[in-house]
Length: 120
Length: 108
Image 1: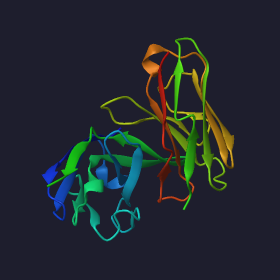
Image 2: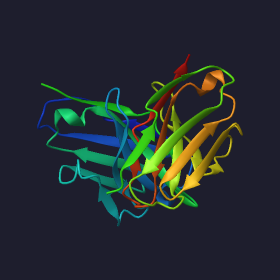
Image 3: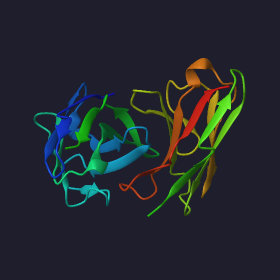
């Protein structure tokens, strides 16, 4: 089991940028595939981005492609999400989650989430 | 893109009731379907993976079934701690994941 703690959320103006971090502990982080999943207030879950264990394979949801960048530092046991050109519709709680294989890929461990509010 | 739908969007039930939630995929996803439970203010929790496999530590009153496009999550006897929102999620088109819109289970 991996413990995940997100940080970096806050209030940002439309068009602005923000960088989220997710610190992992308890396991060999470099072995884990990771994702960001978000949840707008009162809404459902939306997968945002995926990164392989080495960082060589990256995917994004269409809603954030070209604006968000996922990355990781396996020495610092950390996952990041650089968000730019932010819009009101990006307002959400952002969770980092480990992606593990249990016959199929699942989101197994989750952080507590960090709230991003995009508003003027 | 694979779209996921769930029904109902919400339901009211009593402790001890049998509850069934349905999830449908827009195309066949074999058994690449997972179920999560989320309580207010908390992160989601994995309940069922690969359509019917129970995650370690999850009570046996939870079960999943289905394949291809139609799936169900069943709670055999609803307990007070089961009042939550339940989401299905497809892992067929990985790593492009999709969640269903959720089903809220509240107290009648």
